[in-house]
View (cartoon, rainbow, N blue to C red):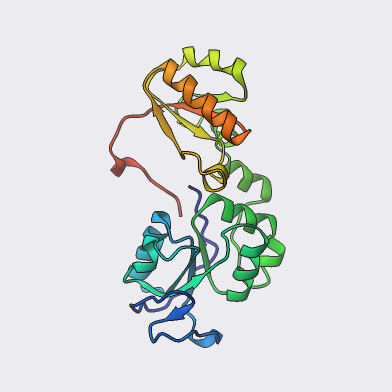
Length: 236
């Protein structure tokens, strides 16, 4: 997950999101003066964490997403809810520009859409984004692995699988490993698994073949680093 802070303005949290496109009193509001100060795009578990953090910091938050069943819509810190047709591509841009407030995005393909159309989005939002090639590197696990290795960053040993002949390289890794598509776009679009732990070379080969067939793109296999979830950190 890559989550980029595109802007932040102070406000005060109110309770009671309604679905779709309404606020606490149940009426849709379109005037800028009464809109909350931040928009979180994506109501998944990543979005819930950001909504909680912003709300606890005293920021008004609108949650935008495609399904009312996702958890961030039901947070006490969400002051409003907006239904978006999609979280990437032209339909997403239309909804985003219509809303036009401070923005937090929670999925990689949303970040990529904003990055690719940053001049258009910048008409309504103050953007804090790296240049396009750096954004692409951050959302692509293969490109980030290569960047980390070139700069001596402490990352697990990994192998890029582009086809059947690359599977022989699995013999050089320690097991268990984690097998992932190169970007989470495939998770959203093709509904493949975000990640799969494999305990043996044979299991890793089977998972890689399944992913290669399903996404028609690179697969990355990384050595598994044991530890609790409390040792996982994100930069928002």
